[in-house]
Length: 608
Image 1: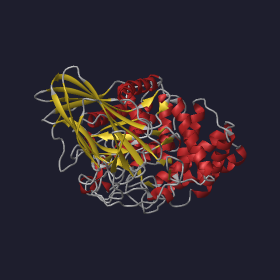
Image 2 (image 1 turned 180 degrees about the vertical axis):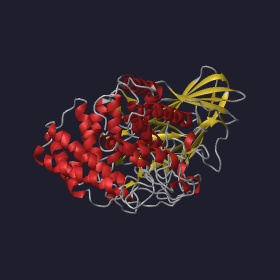
Image 3 (image 1 turned 120 degrees about the vertical axis):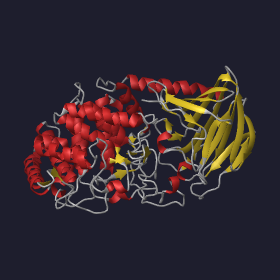
Image 4 (image 1 turned 45 degrees about the horizontal axis):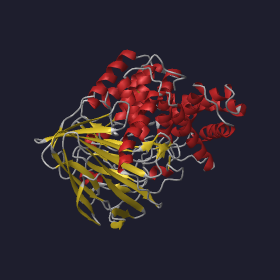
């Protein structure tokens, strides 16, 4: 990865570039840090809580927590090796300072409160830094206020209590209901800490500043321990570790749920309306992240995530929803807070209306994930086994219906990707029944329905004129999601699948491996990062290894030489070399891991 040097002010019209943010987290929340030292996004205490800091969605109304030199600066940063602890180095005309940042945890897991820590170490000369904190108002729904307890400032924002914890060297110049301003001057060898501790509807612990400082190193050691227990032996090991650590941001430790992303409403196209809330657990995304955890050898995460997913579905009487909250409840309907949106991209959406959509591809996601889970040596319990049999029967009954497809479109169609995923679901159900993992009573039915789906797809979804499987029958448009169904191609019609991959490359990539999602969408959004990696995986699995390796290197060169420290967003605009969409996005990182696995000689289990 190519490190980027930033210069003040590194912000235009109040906004930083989306690709210029770094992230810190602890398995419950994620904070985004701009190059100018401003935390512009932090939902506390949970990923899907209302934001404490939200300037990324409104440069004027939003809250932030900024720490940076007062004079002009140059900045470079990187994560510590094998860790999500971030180190940022500011150089000014008068000196140099190193800032180390972490949302702290313990060796035993997360703390019973939220603890954000920023350590400042003087390297050269003297650097005067300004600290500024403004609490968010949740789109003007509340008014934060300041209390003083034993001469310590405590801020209240709705149900949140937030206490700044500073070293003695920090001088508070102003503190009132709106926030605070403070200053600090570093010198060679100096060391100070700026921290925030927060709780929601609970008493607030007041840890000593020294303990907050110490827990930065504890958190670093815990990250390193997790990475060192991974068993990846494939290509791109440093990139893989960084993507694994990014996925770990999205693993919600209290339940085992896997969030699709840590943010909401970051635009897929500037000034456009595709601005969604991804702070929930999608069945599809969760299954694919579990798949990547299997490849990484992250056994504990894999088991916890799969158990949470199946138990959540069972708890709701096997009513399969596209997404759930991180606590396993139904996702709320969309609402639209009155915020400007990132650089004027409205509406800002909270909640997600995909919650009620029918997405038939989920059956394939779940059954294929269960098969992989078993293939690498794990064992299903009786409740999960029965659930999988039930879902296979639901798939056999439902595959003829229209749905909203993987892209959650308002127009319901017989999407080709959905039909191929239903074929995959029943193919996996047959294999699970043959292996004695689920009830075999309906095995014959599943085989016959699987073959009916195959015949239907081959008759209705192939276009001779396009030499490709199309978006849906009767359409000549292409869909990059077909790259996900390479297993169908390897078992049913390899020649047609390879022809489709080539057509997708030419039209949706404009002869580049960076792909738009489907025909015509490039007028309103950017290339979808996961699609690029999905196509590499498909090429490798279909034995086009040379082309897959070439495309993989081109994708990594494009994405990792931009200054982004591998906090992949949802999309990348190849026209402006700018990142777009929510971040970190699980799909982007897991797709890279799965593509690298397909190129590896050490791929465990049965690839699906």
